[in-house]
Image (cartoon, rainbow, N blue to C red; front, side):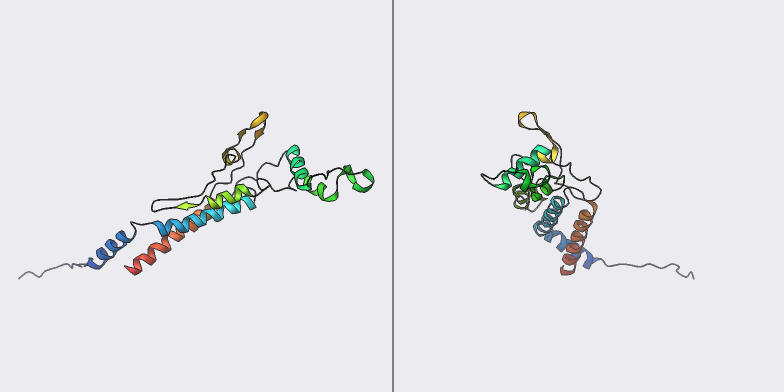
Amino acid sequence: MAAEQGVTIIYDDTSVKAGLSALSRRLKNMRPVYRVISEIMKEAVDSNFVAEGARGGHAKWKPLAFATRLGRLNRKMGKGKSVYLKRKRAGRFGFRAKALRMMAPGGIKILQDTGRLRRSCAAGTSFNRYQASVGSDLVYARIHQLGGKAGKGVTIPARPYLFLVSSDLVEIEATIADMLIAEWDRA
């Protein structure tokens, strides 16, 4: 009489299959996931503007040219007011003190003169069942992102503002994992 040897474990994965099936049906519409991802992307782009590009190993944007700073300063001073004053009242170089601070490199925020570009990125956040995106439809958005020649032979350096850093990607991955776990628990 031979004794049977060995052992067998049988795993009934009916509940796992049912859970995966329910999860698959729920995940056909990824809209809620992409909505959250688009918000993370929007916050990342906003942080890029605040840091003037210097996030996650990216270099800070090239400073504005002197002529650009001067033109912006004159616009901010208002109509009929000149940046230049009589030397007695104006102090160093004939500029007001505030004007001097603004004229120094870094004294004026880059790509944030009117705030239109930054706001257009927030407004340009979109998502659907298949993707999330952030961008701008302003005509000058592309040249600031990629750099290039503008009118009158002016070269605008690339000042990328549409990028994600590793911490943004980690946040997106964690969000996806949390949402998958929550859907699994509901299944």
